[in-house]
Image (cartoon, rainbow, N blue to C red; front, side):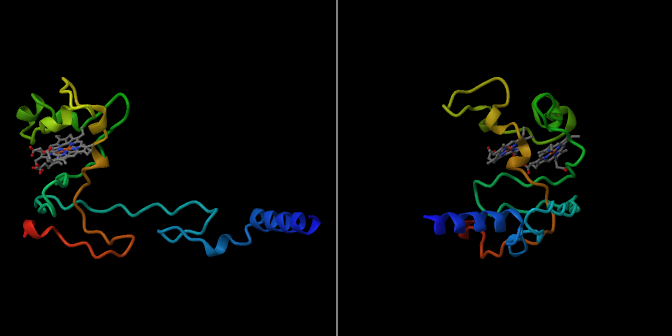
Amino acid sequence: MNKIMGLIVALAVALGSGAFAGEVKSLRGSEANSPDTAPPVYKTLDGIKLERAYRQQPPLVPHDTAKYEIDSKVNQCLRCHEWPYSDQEKAPKISDAHYVDRNGARQDHVNGNRYFCKQCHVPQAETKPLVENNFQPSATAR
Ligand code: HEC
Ligand code: HEC
């Protein structure tokens, strides 16, 4: 019993002193227990429109989004993409799917499950994947 307790204490001390910390790294290369390095700011590919890689893909954003605030009070994306502003701003209108709640009921306002636009729509940029993968666009998209 004492031996086991001793091992547990030794392990706790080792973990507490960060003996293993150097071996664990985040995907961006920072060591465990140190603040993650900020991701680089990518330049948006403006003026061109990249194709969707599969039919259901949320379209990529063909403009910079850094200045547009989205929080519980303000959603600046809507000031251009929600009807009737979309007509005035000549921006594509969000589709009706953005007004449907999780039970399929249609609503007057953008549903909460579509409120945080950048959860699905990311700005177009030339980036290197953090994790290697062999994704290929859907065969029917080519
Ligand atoms: C000042 C008006 C304005 C604001 C604000 C704005 N957009 Fe746009 N957006 C546009 C216009 C105009 C287009 C049409 C493409 C173009 O000319 O860049 C567009 C295109 C898009 C598209 C491509 C749609 C498609 O069918 O391919 C997406 C997605 C998009 N915006 C998402 C966003 C998101 C997300 C935000 C908030 C972070 C946002 N937009 C804020 C004006 C705006
Ligand atoms: C849960 C994922 C998701 C979220 C969140 C979301 N969208 Fe979308 N969006 C999609 C998908 C998928 C499509 C393509 C299918 C469709 O049109 O419904 C789309 C389509 C669009 C289009 C193109 C519509 C068209 O007819 O060409 C625009 C513009 C757009 N979204 C803007 C927004 C804005 C602005 C927000 C935030 C208020 C937002 N989306 C939030 C998934 C999402």
